[in-house]
Each structure stands twice: as structure tokens, then as C-alpha cells.
Image (tube, rainbow, N blue to C red; front, side, top):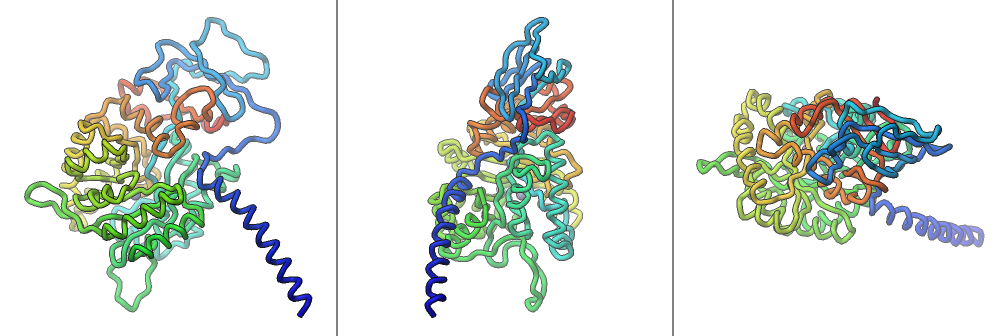
Length: 451
Ligand SMILES: [Zn+2]
């Protein structure tokens, strides 16, 4: 009895120590710093000599050639390249004089655990026939692809039934086990009973769900606590479903959560210093999300003028994910859902109004919703086609995207003190934004990923 009691005290003390240690870890995690994988050994020094630099801040390119000095993980200096400028022998010069250098690109809407789901059958197949472990192996390939395309940071907005696998992918990248972008992750996401695939199976057949099924305000708070405790940086909610186009051209939807539920989820997330991304494509989903105070609207195919005003006033981000809509429209129409084609026109009209209203439009693609063999940088072309200047589109994928992530002091521009996340392309992206689909130099945190 006595020894058991002593053992109990010991366990309790150890437990307290563990809790203390964990409190430190968790508070650091809550701030979700960009992962820094410092190489052991001596600090690497690079100088990148660039034909032009688009620094992500100003909407113009540099006039002449620039030198970007990189020491270790960070940018040390940037200045106009002097004639016959020379550097000490330990400095490695990377000649990019025939290229334009830009900050590493940021995709704020990805699904690294997904391999493209044009039809419902594609999606069901992945959840029913692939283990989370196998999907995680595929995800390690996807993050390497993302980095090689030039995306040095991503916000991954849910694993689609693969649990907390995104937390481990992020961990493996930050520990230098696998190559990949800096990540913020949303883990499982949330939707209400009966609203999210897999659906349509007989009541007696247990099937997996692509989200955590959550009902009621208290259920929402509990799910937020659970997901954050397991490593979620963001909370992702699905705010609507069941789309149809009304005679007035407005995209009607069925709201999933009640306003009370949404408010509880957002309040709980914000209380714990985390942000909320809301999948909202139609009138009510967007409106309820804004009423609840979410931080970003994902997709937003239709947004009422009043709601655009609210977004501009509150600084709510709009992540339109255009390319995926075009990509899935044909397949879903062929499957008997022609609404997806009409939605593309509605989306374009909304995008125009959002631009005019001064809403913060941020680059996000839904990569994973389409196959990772497609370069997500195709999104740039759509943004420009729908009315942005190339410079605005680039800003949306660099400094503005960094702001959405809360990493403005770390990434998104080429400035001294920032992580050396730099890409380069041949040609002038301010004249032809599609050159960003052919990034052929990638540096992340001062390490050359692609040359
Ligand atoms: Zn998505």
C-alpha cells in the first residue's frame, strides 16, 4: 500500500513536470512560427544576383540588377548590383541575372492529403480504399511537389478524413525529414450531421467522414479544443452545401451550422488565439460566417454586396480558389450537376465586385481538389483574367498571403531579416503572369531546393 502511495506521488510530480514542459511547447505552437530547419554545421552564405526583383511589397519590379545576400536561413541585405561587385570566398554566388526573383509563393488553400476529387466516386474511393498511412505517404510527395512549384508556404485546410496526418507532415518538414513548404494546418475541419461526404450509404453501413461531425454550440467548442490540442493551427468549418442558382442569378445554399453554433466555434477558436477559415460558397453560408466573425471566406462563389462591405471593413480575407472551380465544373456537370458550370460565371461576377469593394483577396487554389500533377500557379492566370493586375495577383500570393497567415514579419517579401524564401523565373511576370507556372529556382530558408 505504502509503496503504491509513494508511486502515486511520484507519478503526480512527474505529471506536473510534464504539464509544465507541455505548457511551454503548446504556447509556442499556438503562435505557430514558420518552421525553421537550420542546418547543423557552418552557416551558408549565398549571394543571388537577380536580373530583376519583385520584392512582394511594392507593385513594381526593380529597375536594374539586384544582389540578395543570404546568411543562414535569413536575408541579410538587398541592394542594386554594383559593377564588378565581389564577395569573400566563403560566399557562393548564384547567377540569376537572366531571371526575375520573387518572394517564395504562398498557397493559402491546399489539401495535401487529397489526390483530386472531380466526382463523388473519386472522393469515396480515397476514403474507403486508402488507409490514412498510405495517404500520408502520398502527401509527402505532394508537399515536395508544392515546394518545387515554388510554394514555400502553404495553409492546408483539412485532411479529408485522414485525421491529424497534416500535423505529422508539417512536423516531418520542420524536422528536416522530408522537403516541403512551411505549413499551417487545419486538421479535421467540421461540419454538421448529414452534410459532408461520405453520404448516401445505407443507415446500417458505417462509413468514414471527410470531417469531424459536430452538432450544437457545446459540441463545437469541444471540437475546437480537441483539434487545437492535437496541433491545429486553423479551425476550418463548412458553412454551406446544397447549391442551386436562383432566377435572380444568386447562388442559393443550405446553411450547415446554425448561427449559434458558428458563433460558438469562432469564439472558442479566437479565445485560444487561433483563426477560423470558412468554406462558404453561397448567400447564406457567407453571411452567417461573417456574422460569426470568421477570418477567411473560402471559395465565396456568391457574396452579396452588403457582405463584401463587411469584409472590406473588417479585413476578412477572401480566398476565391478559381482554378479548381473551372477544373471540376466539366466533370461534375457530366455527373449530372450542371450548377457547377453556372457557378463559374457567378464566381467571376463576385470577384469583380470584391475587387471594386476593396476586399483583401488572397491566393489559394484548393490543390488536392485537383491533382497535384497540375501546377497550382495556374490560379494566377485566372485572377488576371478576372480583373486583377499581375502585380496584384503576385501580392495576393506573397505579402498579403503572409498577412493572412500572421507571418508578415517572417515571409512574403524579400527584405533583410525575413526567411530567405526566394523563387526565380525566366521572363517578366508583371507582363505575363503565366511564367509563374515555370518557376525554375527555389530557395527555402536559405537552402537551395531547385536550381
Ligand atoms: Zn478546399
